Length: 431
Length: 167
Image (cartoon, rainbow over all chains, first blue to last red):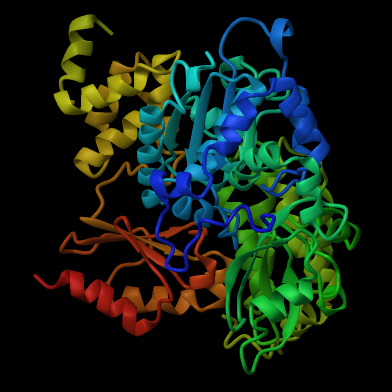
């Protein structure tokens, strides 16, 4: 039987980590052998053909992203870097923790194959500081790889060399933005950088660099070993592969599952998450983390893939949904999110540094009975200017406006209720 | 800064700390690239980063103390003030908010007598908010020291914190 859940095949119910022996016994490091038997160019072609898209949230085609890295004679002498973004901090997102804690070798094998494809010689795993267990497991797994000859000077006798380091971060959501991550890895404040130049050409210390999410990299060696057609056959729609979907909020069985890409939203919420808790009804949901637009009941039958959710006016983002129930105030919900993004702004660009705290303040006024009708016009203007791509270096501020603008669109009565002092959910103005 | 002054400053760091920092320097192209690692190493030994430690790290990395402070104060998990024996990182992001983290924060404040950013008078705990901890299916959650506590309720919070405060 062909493998239908490649990413979680080693994930046990008790979430005990898979060690080298167990990983190899289940076919581990065969993808690495398959990759080393091919040229890097051939590996890249398979990846392009597979239609793998970045699982960190943007959904950019991975093969195309990698094709901008200078190869061979076109690359000036010096290091080339591969970085794994394991800085999972998007509100409502809890998928990479599963992969890191349950199957660290899968990520490392994916990274070695990716680095070989890119001919990178140094790899970093940039992991958030709070993931202590995952950090320790990755360090142990890297040591085990050196003993086996999967990492180091002459990998499996092919002459290819790669060193890998784990960098435990020191906090701040913005480090998950790829150019901010690079700044942080260089030991600086995590300010995002303007693009171009793109990291593929000038990234870490000015050298060609690829940054990819944990889940993206975990797919790579499976694709090289089993082929592009196998990967495409896993998805239910145009988008290929499987996806780790999650649901949190007032559902009976919150959790994270590997399912075919394009699984309908309703099936994820009702079948896997067990439907709403008794006494609660679904009012809306953020499809993929705190910086995606609300969708509502009318969107439940949509396929969860990049294009379908994009056409519905939101983004699939990280694929981990947050449910807004009918007993939670939408104004309080978006105030929590906007206040979060205001706190996490790096402070470099004015619309973000000054605009987000202003939005949070207006929402706080509305929530706490100090709101005026004209505050809605102020919010609409903020959504327009703070939400515009291009007014800031990175997507933090536009992302912060996504739940706000869609809450204003789908739940206008929630704002009206607060302005008239009649919110049925908020007791004395607080949640 | 004269070399003698610089050496004096660096002597504020232990041999163990310096060795750990130098091990990081070995695999990066510039000394100051390990600024964050160095701050974390010193904090792991001392609990926080004092002005004296900051100046010593800066001298060792050939950078100014002000530049290093600009980096240290950017990151929420580098502590430039003393913290308690254990730091409570209470998640207040959206999934935990839906499940009532505001009430839990209130309960912790009543139990320990500290608001966000404060340390208990017996120096056992410092209470801080933290970005989504990536355990939203088990919301609400918090970390106490290195340990994650899931599916919190008012009773379990008291058990977790009260249990640890018993001498």
